[in-house]
Length: 109
Figure 1 (cartoon, one colour):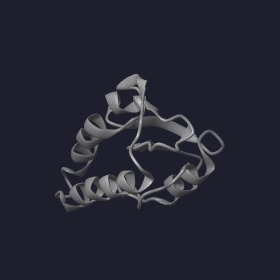
Figure 2 (tube, one colour):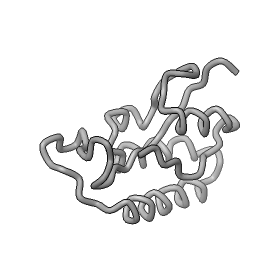
Figure 3 (cartoon, helix red, strand yellow):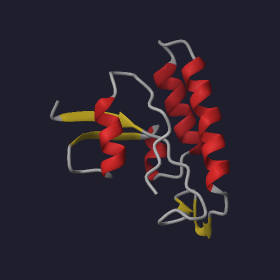
């Protein structure tokens, strides 16, 4: 596989490389890493529990509601990308997934 289309949800924490969100770029994020992981775990569980035919919509809604990345406006959609274009940890996890599979939480910072 040379390229993939991927959606993601980013929850930054106080020690993220850039601890701000597109939602309020002038306010520093103060949530702990543990709180971010707990919240992502809850979000992931809701997505996984959704019937498979609604899972993409559930994911997109969650991204729009919670993600700290600008891609939230597009339901977390990063579009199509090839290897070497994203954070390596994220990219490795993304390229291992089957179509419509939801990964475990991937920590990139």
